[in-house]
Length: 248
Ligand code: 13P
Image 1: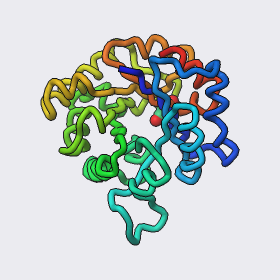
Image 2: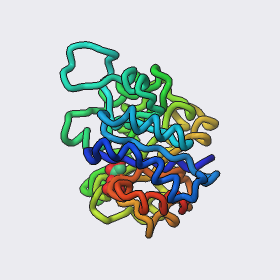
Image 3: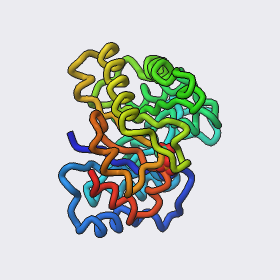
Image 4: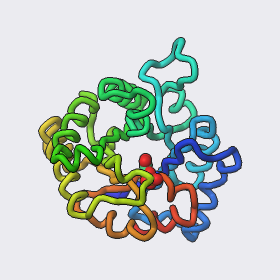
């Protein structure tokens, strides 16, 4: 399986950043390494421009969130359909920042992911535990309950990616140990297997996110069960992001 290396720009960027896919392609020496699939998730207002450019260079583009309905009186929201119409390939669902700051619950994340799948894109469903949950030995049960309640019945390995992002590792410079990452990815695969069968679980792409940088990318991406990375801060700098792609 190719490693899915995704840039989550969060609320950063400007229209000039639409040329970032070309800059990344140049930094990679004008070839996308065979082992990587690159995904760029800009703020929605730039999605269409970024997607057009990303596709020119063999990369994918995605939105960072969507509403679960197709249309309606939901001021300020965008639907999965609209993102698909802007040529998105994926949508991130239930990032911990959305769960913590914008009221996303497991149930709304599941509904969003369902609408992403219905719109023929890939849903990147994020799960992650807090430091308190990890320190009190509840990391596994927290992740299992998020997974069971946030993953729609229509999920398959073809339309779903799970991103494991321990909340305490996001933007902090702290990363989980390689042992903890391997253990949690195996746990996620086991829970997914119980929900959707062993074959789907084997084919499932599970990304790690949380302070992935050029310096740790190779170790993280070669850890058992890690099929990609969801990169925040380091994806804002194309030199750093290119190094992470090359590490894969
Ligand atoms: P950082 O890479 O900045 O820790 O962010 C991770 C993240 O939240 C990606 O979705």
